[in-house]
Image 1 (tube, one colour):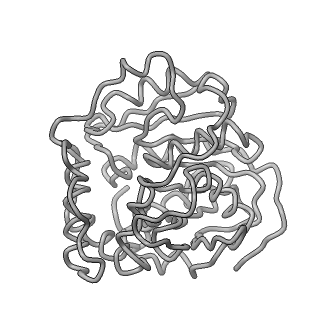
Image 2: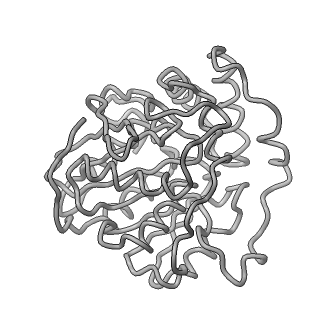
Length: 312
């Protein structure tokens, strides 16, 4: 499996259908979907400060075409303060981390899906864990990609630290929100650093970054995710997660080195899939021959129910 699935490139968001909006509780969340809504839904939850473009379009199409009992209905969305979702002034988020987690449920409600296969990347993986703990009826399966524990445990101090090369990565002011070129360069540089010694495709990354910057109401507002208060803590521990869980981690992840192994060990029945040469990133095309069959197996069950559709 390579990039350009069905001729779709990583930044070809238009191939995923129209942008729609989930509107609830005073927040507007932009989302797209590909595949038949009658098939099991895979909800892609992105990383901190990332619009949905960082789930590349060709990967979304490849996920929709998974083999198995059914094809998949794949949904990706902009977190608030990214892309075309509700955006606050930089430095002034009016929401909590819990709100960002529960936005995933608002998207599922708008799509008309009671339960989905939740695939979370980095912060999105933490969100998937929190949803599995407090809303297991909404999570058919969880796939945790390039992430770490969302809830603390007694052996957190034993987790390996980030690579020293990442020190200071997020220090300093953001580029001018009107300077598209500088914003794209900053996003490419960040992704290059997070890929570490893994597979880095600059052209692919630049295409995704450009679309993400150009689509965003304020490309610098994603930093609000760091400034938001956490909100009410999520109850439970990783040992309480009962939904089928797959942990996907890169062997070259410089942000969370070795955290995938620890995460899988802490969740009952979780399986671990290590992807050779992957850093802290959405799985690159070079990994798909291994990744996609595992996701087909993991998400092979049907969604148990639906709620009325509420398209914006």
